[in-house]
Length: 224
Length: 231
Image (cartoon, rainbow over the protein chains, first blue to last red):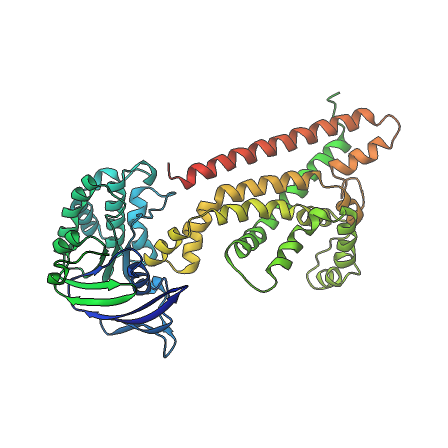
């Protein structure tokens, strides 16, 4: 279970959000500028709240009243960024293996084979990120995050930088991933995308949570 | 023309040794400082930045004299190092290496700093979400991506070190076989009757070394760009 109760001032913009989530895929829905990325960055530990608490499965990740802050590398929370952020100096195989090496995990060829199969990236292993298409890059980024064996997976508009054709190409992989059972927080401004993926919705507008609940809350909503 | 005399050889080899040691010892400090200047804001940063660049704008004779005052046998640091660690800089080739290291330091730091500033910090964030501790982020992302800049800085620093004259001769004098580098050998030769030919040879050699270093530095800079684009 993920519990978030934070406030953060970013220049003129103020974010004040609280929600708890038991759902397998929590969709953070809102227009750009609603505070979705700041919120997800706080869950990842990349941004510290001014005030508030973040807990995951009973473990306190942030608590400003006690000064507790678990740094990102100790959270075991995977993050798939909109812009993939593959390491340009490593090939696909090394990118995929990166999280395992950093966490000192034993090699797990079965898991590796399963993930590369699931995402159809077995044929890309020897390529450099610069030689991949946008969709391939995003799939490798997914695989890289999964292979670090996170207990929660954050996705910040993973389809945002792709054109319609590519979105259709990636979406089935995301649905497969959801059915793997790893909890996810999925950020999007696209209601249709969330209707297919999310099991629970947190709607954000101007830094405030305006609705919470099942995908039904998306009905009739435009991210204005 | 190309009969290089033993004295000249000694000067050439000494120059190479001094410049190589100066560059190798200065590089870790250069990386640390470049990273500090590129990535951190702290009180006194502009003073530190100015201090690093000081050898570039001070008259070399002043830098040499300051080194003599600090690292000479009676200098505060020099006396302590000699008494406690047995390291002596005054009138030794090690002193020449120190002078060259200090003089070339600004040129070493600059390309490293620029290459660290050019690194996309979001890659470092990605690295930390994958479980890398800050030192691992530095070792596996920052350092490899800055490597071409580091090599370019080392080449430039080396080229500067091998040509250094003013601070070296002020600090450790011009002793053949110990502190007489190519530059100070040229200086001695052109003050000697009939020294022109020998001076000419050494001039040619220093031009070749400097050109080679600049071409190598260009090549590393190009590699840096390719690397950051992941091709």
